[in-house]
Amino acid sequence: MMVFNQAVLVLIVAFVFTPVIAGIVRFIEDLRFDKQVAQRTARMTPGAQPLVSIVLPFAGDVDRLQHQLDIMQASLTYQRYEVLVMVSAESTAILRRLRQIVAQNAAVRVIEFTETTNSANLLSQGAMFSRGEFVLTLPKNGVVSGNSLEETLALFMTDINGIPAAHVGAVMLETLPRRADNFATTIA
Image (cartoon, rainbow, N blue to C red):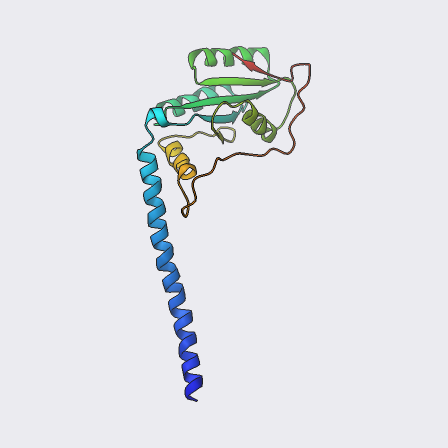
């Protein structure tokens, strides 16, 4: 009977204290990771900032696009970014207005696809046209604002569990073929 009671006591201790100890260890690791992210964010001076390419599929409304770009330009605290607006088979009037937007803002590039394609394909092709070290894809009508880019980059640039931060990349298994008829061109 005594051996049985000791076994029950060991099981109770194991089931009660193991999660408590694991929770304490996890809490300490989270504090350490958050501290690393905060330190990395604080060290991101404009000269040390990697270029971020923000890929945005065009929703068909030039005024809405101008509003999105104005919000990003006014509120982003991050300095080194470019915006790639991915356009699929639009009219010449819309392309003319997009050229005006590009002329007003040096951080914006418009990539025109001469054939109709879906948003997912536009985003993956936008990654191919990007110049940045990091690529951020947004949905149609999406914006990024405040210090969200710094916080996101700090996560990618922070060592995790003693392992140095690795280069982040994306693998696209299928891409649109590049054709001789200028399937995609940059509007400048």
